[in-house]
Structure formats: structure tokens, C-alpha cells
Amino acid sequence: MIAPAQGRIVRLAETARSPVDFWYDSEALRALDGDTVLTAILLSVRALRDAEFGLEKRAGFCLMGACQDCWLWQETGPRLRACSTPVAQGMRLLSQPSDAWPAATPEGET
Amino acid sequence: MTTRVLIVGAGPAGIRAAQTLCTAGLRPTIVDEGARAGGQIYRRQPEGFTRPLEVLYGSEAAKARALHETFDRLVASDEVDYVSRTSVVSLAAGQAQVLQDGKIRLVPFDRLVLATGAMDRVAPVAGWQSAGVYTLGAAQIALKAQGVALGAQIVLAGSGPLLTLVAWQLHKAGAKLAAVLDTSSLGTQMRGLPDMMARPGLVWRGARMRVGLGRLYHAGAQLERIETDAGGPVAFHWRDARGRAQSTSCDTVGLGWHLQAETHLADLAGIPFDYSTQWAQWLPHVDPMGRAGEGQYLAGDGVRILGADGAEIAGRLAATACLQDLNLPTLSPHKDMQARVRMERFAQGLSRAFPWPAKLVRATSDDTMICRCEGITAADLRVGSALGENEANRVKSLARVGMGRCQGRYCQLIGAELIAAKSGMSVEGAGRLRAQAPARPVPIGAYQIENDP
Ligand code: FES
Image (cartoon, rainbow over all chains, first blue to last red; front, side, top):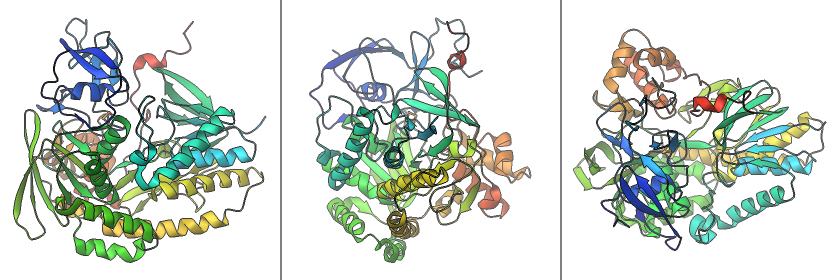
């Protein structure tokens, strides 16, 4: 496992769960079973993705499914809402739409 | 056929509404976005987490347990149909469109109980679009549902009961707080106290938390800006009650000024709204039991911000109203109605003690973002509004404030305040953003239902 680099999130409790390995961009990361995708990523990095309309990065805002700030891409295509999706073994998550797709535009946007 | 009642939301209001309907022999359907029932304040941790309820909910552990157990029993005995991890995205006459597992399906109903809860009410602070700025509610959810702190050095800023509560919960759980900045002065807070004494136990609990926070807590703070670098916040700049400039190092910020009712579905259901100066927000129009339109009932923080105890009462009242309208037997709502009056008085005190920071919002600098979704600045709105459009929906078309992914949830009150400031009218006069379906983003593929094999 890669040692948690400069993460944002700090674990305070519930550390005795089984590990889950997943991919974020080309990095192998490890989280714990029961973590959301947002928790899982931000334990190791400081943001989830770039903002669409500005220079800054995004790392979620409400954590309750109201702001839609935490959407991420998956290698398989569909986006997911990181704050309400549990991380799963072997997930392949992307901070940006994949170049490999014919149209690198997320669903619902033009 | 028995009456089909659809309840949206399984927080304290939705759960008590369901329980009340069951006593009359109805079998309500409850659609809930959560993975497990409980709502936000009594949100449950995922399966496999082991912290006891006393750690999660403090003095409210017994209430949380009672509520969870009540609901688990209703589900186990099949008295309710509980549909978790599912969002209602649209409502039409007698039908709800719900998004479940990436697919849209229709849930027909005869009567509707909306218990959609509340969200943080936020005001813009320069730099708040940066990664690492969250709502206070987010900080609480992270702690409760994940056992984590959103940063290694946290500044919480805003006002309201949640500010002190979240700060205390984080502090107790071992998170490192750098400062707790309350924009309400002690003098303003005292003005709310007489009405807040309608619930002296809560006042006492809040006071004890304040003592526990000690010198971390600052009343009467003026917020100036969040200094950020590429990685997120690095410092919060503010002035203390005596006007002295302060700068607090941090890597994470939580913002929130009490709560805002989540009213998207009420709007889609066609329920009329009134502007409440007390709450500085638009609220659905209901009778004291929670009756809205024909066959429509509202309960909990999604209609009046009375907190968790008030939500349990409102849930029972809304369901009782529903049963009355169906000519089914009910228990007397008298005691709940009386308790509700006490809750209202307390809430009135809260709204006076921890007001919406209108002055701070009106003073928003031109280059401050007011829409985090699309990066729209105060200047963009002021220009849109200067073109002669002084109505929220018109300004939305011109300046796109309210057009983003959150659908105006977080910028609507800010926008209305700025329009009012610019045009010299009241915030009410600036109007209310009309909700549009879907209430949550829906992938286009989710609508391919009919053609599925
Ligand atoms: S952080 Fe707001 S929807 Fe996920």
C-alpha cells in the first residue's frame, strides 16, 4: 500500500475495519470498508477533482447529496457522487473525464 | 383498496409520521436518500462501525435509539415499505418519480407527506469556493457517519446552534479546532434568550458546550476572507468583537448560519410559499398540523426549523391530519399541538439570537464567488441585476445564479439579498427561485425504462 501522502481527512475513530484497495487516477490507494469514496480519496489527497468553472479544486461541500460538488468519473464511464457512494474493492476512479472516451463530456452536460 | 401514503424522508419527522399512520392500519411507503433510516441528526453509521450511540449522539442517545428501534420494528413487521438510497426527483399528480440504482421508476400515491429536512444556510466568504471549505453539517456528517475530521486544523464559522454543537462534537472526538467564529455578538444572542428559555434544558446544554470550547469560541466575529493556496485554505482572516484584525491558520473551514428548509419537492408539489422574515427564507404555507394542499402534508425542518424534537412532533401531527382527512380514527393531537407551541417559541428565540448575516452578505466584495457551482461572482450578479432585472428568476437567466448543479439551494438566499441591496427593495420583493425538476441530477440513461427487456 502507498503510505497516505498529504491527505485532507483525518481518521478519529473506527479504524478496525478491513482494508479496501482502489485506484484513483493512476495511484493505488487503500481505504477501509464502509468509507465513502470521498473519505477514501481525501485520506490520501487534498481534493477530488478540478472545478469546471474556475481554477480551484473541489473536495465536496455538503456531504449530504445536496450540492453535487463531489461528482467523480469512473474508468467505466458513469459518474458517481463521492459523498454518498461507498468505496468498493478495485474501483477505478478518475479526477477528470478519460481521454480514451469518444466524447469526453460528462452526462447531462454540453 | 387502502389509501397509499407516500412519505419522503426517514428522519425524525418521517419516522413518527410512518408510525402514526401504521396505528390506523395504513401501510405507508417511505422513500429515503439515506442508506439507513435516521435522517441527518440521528444519522446512523454504516454497518460494521462500532461506536456506541452515546458517543454518536451524546445526550440525545436515548431519543436516537427509540427512533431507530421504532422504525426497525415497523420494517421488520412489514408495516411499512422502506425504500432506502432512493431520491424523489419529481412529483406529478399522484405519482412520484424516483431514482433508485441509477434507474427512474414511478411510485403512485394518494396522499403525500414531505419530511425532507433541512440543509445548512450559507453566506459567502471570499475564498469559500476552495477545496476544503465545507458546511457545518458536512463536518458533522463526516464525524458521525465516517468517524473522521475533514481536516487537521479546522476553523468553524457562522452562527446558530449547530456551530456550537459541531464544534463541541469535533473537539470531544479529538479533532483539532483552530477557532470557532460566531458572527452573532453576545448582545444579539442575549436578545434571543428569553424565548429560548422555553426549553431551558437545551440552553443549559449549549452553555456547557461553550464552556467546554473555552477560548476557541469567539462571539461577534467579523469574517473577512479565507486565504487559500492551490491545496485549499491556509488561513482565516477575521476581526474580533473589538475590531482587532486576526488571522488563524487552518487547512479546513466549515461554514453555516443555522439551517434552511429543503423545499424543492414542496415547490414541485405546487405548495404555495410565504416569505418568513423571522427565518429569513421562503417557507411552504401550511396549517398548524402541517396540512398544505389537498392530500399534502409537510413535517419537520423542511417546513419549520424546530429541530429534531420538533420534527418528531410535526411528523405525528402531519400524519394525524392525514388520518383526520381520511376519516380514520386518531389520537388527540392536543398534547403535541401544545408542545409545538413551546418548540416554536424556542425556535423564535434561536432565530433572534443567531440571525442570518444580512450585513455580511450585502458587503460581499465584487470578486467573491456567490455561486460555487459555476463560479459566478457578486459582480456578475450585480451587473445582471443592474440591467433592470430585480427578480430572482430573471437574474438567474441573466447571471446564471441558481442555474448550477445545486439548483440554487446554496446561492438563492445570497442572490436575493444582493438583488434587494442593489434595488432597494425587500428580500421578499426579490422573489423566490422556482424549483425545477429533477430535484437531483439524473443520468439520462436512467429514463430508459419502458424499453428495458
Ligand atoms: S458533497 Fe455535496 S453532494 Fe456530495
